[in-house]
Length: 100
Image (cartoon, rainbow, N blue to C red; front, side, top):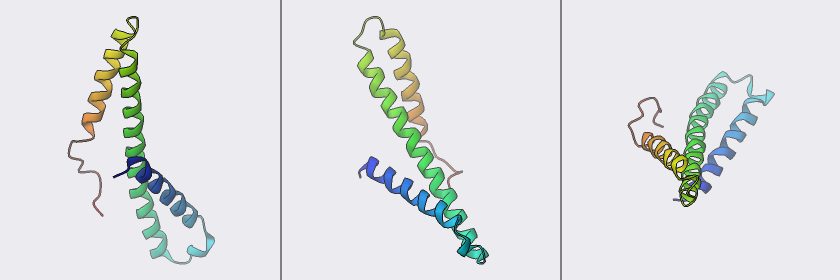
């Protein structure tokens, strides 16, 4: 699984759905609007979580690089703990995410 490729796929799908929702041709079909809106919400939630995961992973990598600097060691250790704590939340059960 390629995380970055998957993230880009979801981001692209989100743009497609947003464009479709802005298309006047679908306004006459309430079911189509509802379906597009529901999918857009799901894709947006997934995209948001993936973007957050990518940011926290990047922050963790940066903090690990800073730890070698004696002046930054304490700050880096705090950042590592914060990032690890944030990353651990991604592995908790998430009942608020709807299954497709």
